Length: 345
Length: 245
Ligand SMILES: Nc1ncnc2c1ncn2[C@@H]1O[C@H](COP(=O)(O)OP(=O)(O)O)[C@@H](O)[C@H]1O
Ligand SMILES: [Mg+2]
Image 1 (cartoon, rainbow over the protein chains, first blue to last red):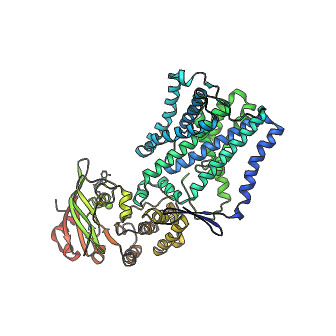
Image 2: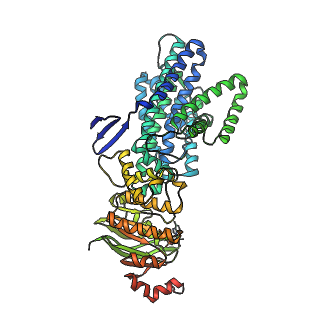
């Protein structure tokens, strides 16, 4: 392992591998402004209208689910329609350990990670063995089966009432201050995910992912170990999504499968990645905030009808904007300074 | 002359159809071997067997001392086998440069190669194939001729020892076909690759190939220098469609 700082590059050599990261401060201004705004929003909200903090937390978490999902979609060349399965797995693992064993959030985080890795690895052969409609249906089915399981073994999972008494993530005394802390934490987590996936999609790893996304057979003929790449791109994002489950459990201090496992939750996640444009990391942030605030707005304007109106609006958006809102913006303001990697979205 | 590839009694059936039936041949280092046969003779299937898309029903395949009969396709590529496709299959959403960079990165385990290094190397192969000006064009936007060139660049970027070229001339106009043939000849000189060249028209192989193998209904019906093959009455009969192997 050897680390080198060149003029505009960080060079990392590990064994026979070499990675280069460009550090170009002239491109830092806009990202710093956006990140600054994202941090400013909850702080301002805290002082002006603290009731809106949960919406911002929602937005951050939705984006944090959609970002690794984008990586999974790209690297397996298939759209997973059941990422909420991993939210359920991570959330239940964390909640059960917290309630029955009294483990603090830091420890249950490890439990959620291990659970995510195990389920991610166990389910990753799906991406190798099945494709097209079968993959869609199978991934769609898993969370629903899990939901059934929470009702059948209701003495463990409390499928009907939900698990209560999960240790809160943060406790500083005041409810709104807690919310602010959690909000900032969710933002940090989302930014961390964004950073990781952004680095991945700009590394040489991404070349193989994009090739797999385009044509698996040709990728294999050009020397890409397709199965290995698929397993990696399935298991790691699965783990990242499982950690969001951990976050939900400790944020609400309760966890129930019925909140996350049904299709309605998946629909939201799907819309986030559709509005952002598939595998558009920054677009997912836009999508997350858009969906969370749209839901809030609809709840205020049409009340209970939101349940019906929300999916309809989303479907209309989906049909009218196949490239996503963010995709339209990117088309107008196109700027690339590294070898361009286009991927199917 | 050293033998680079040996195919022993290889067969493959699809349902009741024997696409390749007990075919044996070998390729020597540095040679251009022509593989000929009417449409549906099993030429592409034979390539798919050697590159690993399908596994053989019977027989075995030796490549430079390795038994590759059951090896995964990507491992065969890393050993030095590469190919182009009869109907070009460029990565539709990757730029020409990145498609070639994928091969440069993964075609062989190379030390200390970053994405930028691979892109630089890919530039070289693009230039060789006359596609430098198309480096930022998406695969789906290339013309048929350009896509063929890209496929060759991609195949060369894996630094192969043996390349399978599947009907480069099909669908090209005579001028483009000439260019494609010359490109292959130059590739052979510059990169020292061995070529197995599939074509269903005889004329193209007459000049380029040292030896020709003829397939018909999945069976090998003739093998020898091109002149001999061209005058073989049985082969001519098969091409006219009146023989029943
Ligand atoms: N995947 C497949 N499934 C079924 N039949 C196939 C498949 N691939 C090829 N064939 C059949 O095998 C025969 C040989 O095809 P091919 O190798 O493509 O011939 P060619 O010599 O023209 O390249 C054809 O009859 C074709 O229909
Ligand atoms: Mg063919």
